[in-house]
Length: 457
Image (cartoon, rainbow, N blue to C red; front, side):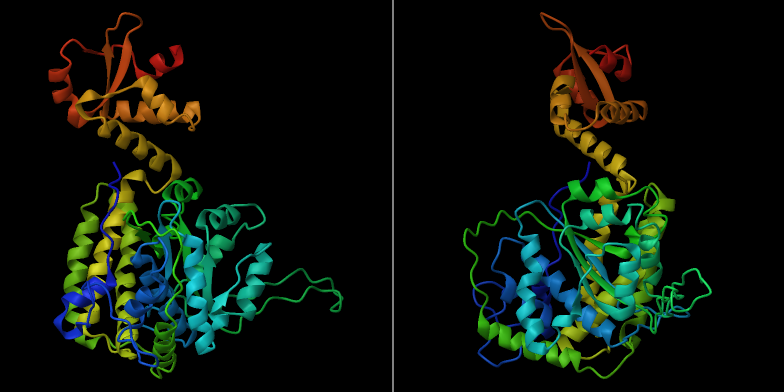
């Protein structure tokens, strides 16, 4: 079962716990006091989260928006992170996974006045490509910037279409690649004036992406090879908490805070260094690496978890660089920024480990949801009729195959309950069978298989 409401990393709370970075607060340690006009915010990320926290989206969503802005600014400047023979860039791809009604599409609008104040509105690049060639032409003309995908499932569906045959893999290959891609050339007709000009790349595209989606829309568009091919592991998967906020009419963001954020982002944009300094946290990283690698290797499917660890080990360094730039407007990673990155990475791990049992594909996700529904029924079980009603949107053959897989693997047992009419069939999760049999001693294990019973109706 996929655990819901995983506690989200809160940047402001993390800062409040660190004595060296304690920020004066008003009523809550997680809230930064409003700065007077013209004052610089102590930290761009936490300051922006306070400024933008006027809609029902949880505060952590605004923190992630700010992370992506900082990353895109550094990436545009060509900042790199030393990583042995394969230096990392500040390419960061983040997706916010939540339910509906969080105002996901509103998130990026709140940051536009800040970018405008710094003269960085062009940091956000369009990605409404009509074809693969149009996308490559876009990256050729504007090689760096932040792509915003209001609904990631729509973009993934587009990238799986025939008129985008290789774009997903092309974008995947650009991640952290310091070299410009090969030109896109066309057949020569022998008449230069009639030949289609090739697409040249003068520099390596530096791509940052901020996407939003719901889990129910995200997973149906995840292809079988998206994990092993490296597409999904490159993403930081963020599960937003459901905190029950109710804001009928959003407030206007505070203009005083906006002025402070503009000054803070101007300083980040003025950083002169182009290489992140990890010297103060090198040993801490090695220790974290060994423990994290062991955690990933302990997962039931190491061959699936390995691609995620291979990217996760770089994600934490990128986060540390982002937090350092946001708080000190420098690139020498501090122990405090490293601690924040460790906590954030821990939350990312929790999401990865929660999703790995799905096989990171649409069928596995649907099957996991079904298993969760049966587990939630506990020692009462769930009748086959109620189960079918709960998943009536799923194609019959898919529902049959998923239940057969759960039954054949022993995760679910089918019981027959005598009634005054036709016997009722009850699905019971493996860990509830003992309690179920005590509670319903007259019920017997079904003799026929699930497929036979389903097909008989």
